Image (tube, rainbow, N blue to C red; front, side, top):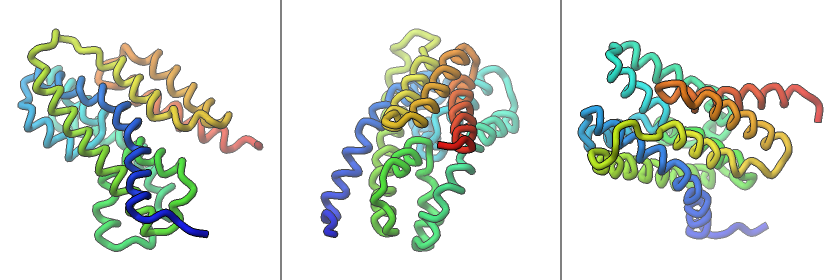
Length: 229
């Protein structure tokens, strides 16, 4: 069996990443605008976006600080929100097992819902080098897009009215993230559960609606995995 050259595989990773990057753009724009309205300079918020690389975990501390919460409470909330990444890490451990040490140390920094679902949808990444390249191209493009749109949102923030529609953007991101998984019945049920919960919980503050939708989707997937096909 012949495989496409590395350049063609990079282009495939970029094509896979483009719709995902577009789906996260509204969330990044709103987070950047909200941070500026709360007094966070755009460059500082872009640095936070590059370090945290997680929408809900980035936004929740912002709203908590604005409400007068302490540093430990805000950081604890961010850690709790990102706890789901432990499940993703366990699922991807075989893919990282035979990788170079530098990749095992730095590759997980690109682990988010979107990169996890992107590699989960591919069945041609069994070779460690091919997985590594796909992960770095896709995750790197998403990270660059995320930092850029957060910065653009920060610049545009003063031009927007207060109370940007974060919850609507969060549901759009969740829909775009789960959309590629709708070809089969079980992923469709998982996506439907996540979206319904996210919409119902949208009025909750601090991006909790998005987190609730993700947790509901994970729970639905766990329940479906325990039922016979």
